[in-house]
Amino acid sequence: MSQHSDDEDCFAGDLFGAEEEEVVPEVKATFEVYTRESVPVGSAHRDLKIKLVGSHPLWAHHLWNASKVFASLFDNTPRLVQDKYILELGAGGALPSLVAGLNGASKVVVTDYPDKELIDNINYNVEHNQVPNTIVDGYIWGTDTDRLRSYLPEGKTTYDVLILSDLVFNHSQHHAMLKTCRELLTPETGRVYVFYTHHRPHLAHRDLEFFEIAKRPVKVDADPEDRDQLGYGFKVDHFMTEKIGVMFEEDPGDEEVRATVHGWQLWLENK
Image 1 (cartoon, rainbow, N blue to C red):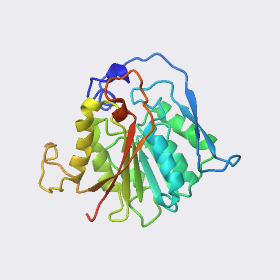
Image 2 (cartoon, one colour):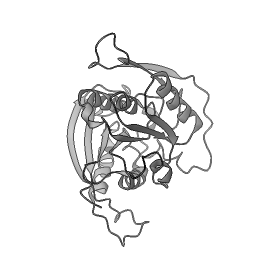
Image 3 (tube, rainbow, N blue to C red):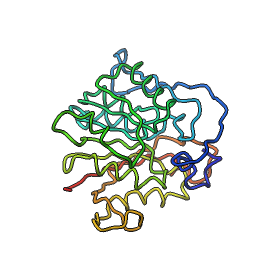
Image 4 (cartoon, rainbow, N blue to C red):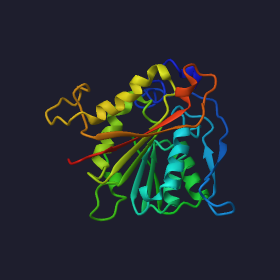
């Protein structure tokens, strides 16, 4: 990440709406094994082999620390996902979704940017780890949600749990993510779980703007182009932190900050 550390929106900003794509030399895929410590040794699905694309402008070639904390949370508190309809945005290697599916979710819909390499990679992880009741699809944040609703059973139009794992560094996409979350979350009982690390400590305030925007009240007469006025009416709660280690040793900034995963939950009291 170091080559991008001082560029606020370089991660996904170019890909979301770029006129030209940068030509990147092909890099072979890598694999990382995630061990589920709460699953007994020798049991099926204790070790999940996660395939990661070789290189990608959306940083899907990393198994992010936030995804590991998500997986641990779902294993240690399976009621969060059991018998629920789950949607993950920007899934990358999709570890949280895999663990949700293995913990008895009714259905998991795993999405990422509709790039063949990304989607094929997620399908590989779902199939090779034998995760049941899981669908993989491409989706661009903030766009029409009808296709995602079509995966729900008749009479159900919203999801119980939405997963956002290490996405808030995409500052230019905060509104798009929140628009989708508001449209697809079940009011009152549903939860959006947002886990992240401040990989660039000098931009932590920009990461946290996601939650300020989320809790702004909805203004029905707000100009959709006036981002300073747009709000989404969420309640927000910073409910956990976990120190797991620095991902990018060479990057600048406080190592304590860069080693810490933060967990937030968002919900809607009503619409």
